[in-house]
Structures are given as C-alpha cells and as structure tokens.
Length: 283
Image (cartoon, rainbow, N blue to C red; front, top):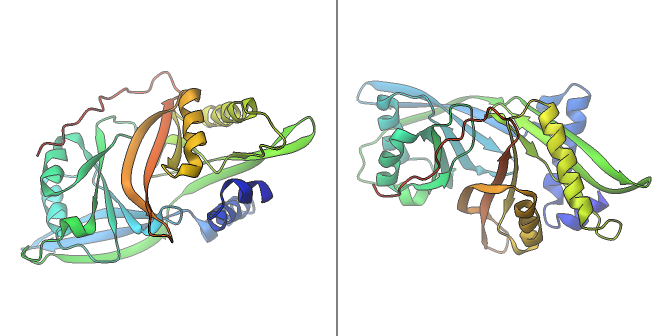
C-alpha cells in the first residue's frame, strides 16, 4: 500500500477498494466490491416504451452514466435522445455507446465524439455530453424509470512485481462484461527509489502478456490528463499504446479542477478488426 500511496496520492481510497475487490474475488465473494453496477432504464413516451442498460463505476464516479445503445433499433435511439433532454439530475455526465450510423443524431443533440473502443463488431462509437448541456425544459415530458440494479460481472487480479528478490511495485488486470474484447491494466506502480525506468516497461510487458494469456484482443489502460500522470502518459506512448478515447471534464476534484478521461490501448490479437476511427462532429 505504501507504493500505491506514493504513486496515487489522493486516490488511495479507490486503490484500496480495488485491492479489496481482488481479495473478495479470490475468496469467492466478487459481488461485495464489484467495480461496475448496471441498471435497466425504462423510457415511455406517447405509448411507446423501450428498455436500455445504464452502467456506472465506483472508479469513475456514480455521477457518470455509461449508456449502452449498441445494436438498438432506430425507434429506441429516438426515444433515448428525447429522454436525455429531460435526464435526472443525479447524472452529471452521459457517455453513450452507439452504432456509428446514429452518431449524427447525438451530435445534433449536443454530444461530442469521445472515440472508439474495441468490442468485437468494430462499428460502435462513444459520445459524451454533460447533462446540463442537453436539458431542454420545453421538451415534452418523457417518463423515465430506473430498476433492476445488479453488479456487473467483472474479474480482477493484482500481483506484486519483484526484482532481485525485492518488491519494487505492483500491477494488475481486470475485465468486465461491458467490454468483451478488452483486458485493462489496473493500478500499476513502480517504486522509483528501488527500480530504474526500464522496470516500468518490463512491468507493462508482463501485464500485457497476462492479458494475452487471458485471450484478450486489446490491452488498454485508463488515466487522466492530471499533471502528476504526465510521465505515465509519455511512457504509455513510448511503449506503443495510442489514445483511443478522450472525455473532457470527466473527473471533478475536490479543488474544483476538471480532468480529462483518457484511454490508451493497442491490439494484442492478430484477428482484431481495425475499424475506422475518424468521425465528423458536424450534425
């Protein structure tokens, strides 16, 4: 925990909870500290009714809603866009996963393109918007009901990193059903007093190898544009990871400063579908 505290100052509580998640999984109680939770969102308007999935994570904050609209019909998309004009206050930021062909509707509603994360089909895109930007008090009321909360199936695994018999750091991976093709690196850190810079690259390589053994097609890491992670971001880029997803104002600190959410990733399976990523933000 000292290595974690030194590397993740201000976020020790999140790191500790993630380690607790690891230990609970090992003893067969993974739902106690599951990273993700899922709700069913029921939308009704003019006799039409649809259901979609909404997820949130304790790492990202409960006020960030991940809304899965992949493989949904045009009618569902239309109702979802209308509902977001009257979305409840308890979500500050909405992040939508949707078929690429529906992106213009969301751009016209006030969303922005976040990027693309692999999910097998290669045709989905992520868009984001702060709820306050979407609210339209003149929009006809849409009935929203949230139900069926449950923990989302996720697996995590943490390990210490040793060199010459001494512990120099820690690393981990996790997977969740929301991203079937991705294995994520989790809370990796190296003690700079005990290891040289090349140990960071070796640790990344070890973590990626574990992801490959798990059958992942992509290896990803999430971070922020916070100044204290500047060197980490540079290391990710030198290692060969590239930015896949960027969402401004994702994290809000106690000091009132907002931080970007950034996902770096790389394909680690030869059969990965390389979908185009350029999407115009013109409505």
